[in-house]
Length: 242
Image 1 (cartoon, rainbow, N blue to C red):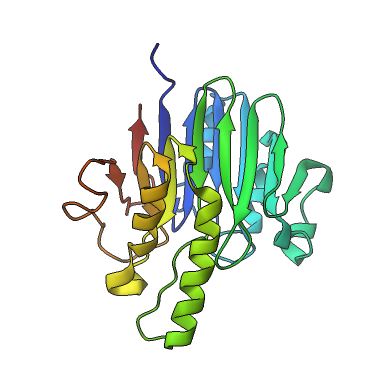
Image 2 (image 1 turned 180 degrees about the horizontal axis):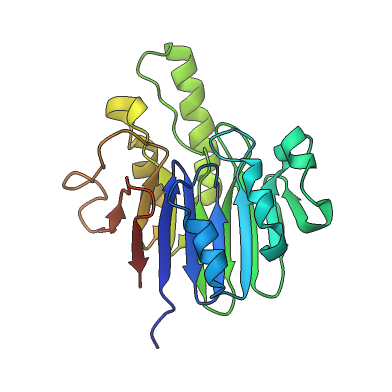
């Protein structure tokens, strides 16, 4: 039996619109110059619409998504958004805030939250009827800055490895994960470690606007592992994963 395709459309930075069946999931939409989300809502070809915000940083959470409230099934926000001025503007009866390592579900989707190595949470979303799963890392990454002190770099490594242990064996049909060009030669260090211990059907890189599209070098995933990689750069660009 064929699986329901997952279609992902790039908004900007870590922002994506994901369609699976008649469910739309919007992650970290802070800037959408191609009007991807507005056009999808106007088309009306969906039954359920969920907005996710992994944390309160301006490049992941913007209050313009409040404009879509009449069409939104649920806003699912990280715990740190609850007390922000922007967060308080949302209709609270329409919002679920997730702490780290917590769960929420309705009849259509099940959501698990994990910790971040910066702020907020990361999300794993299961679409129940379709049997498909998506992981969005938010700002969870191995933030190993080349110019930082040895002490800070070790702290970053420890924080990343601690959280990675909680993700070992996790399955996701599509995983959205930072490959940030600002980290220079370490840009894919976190993604490589993440893919080594999880079961991901495809990797979508994010959080690197303005840098060239990244593709894994030969042997990046190991000798016996091959994972399709998409590194979008143009807002409105789409890819379908079977």
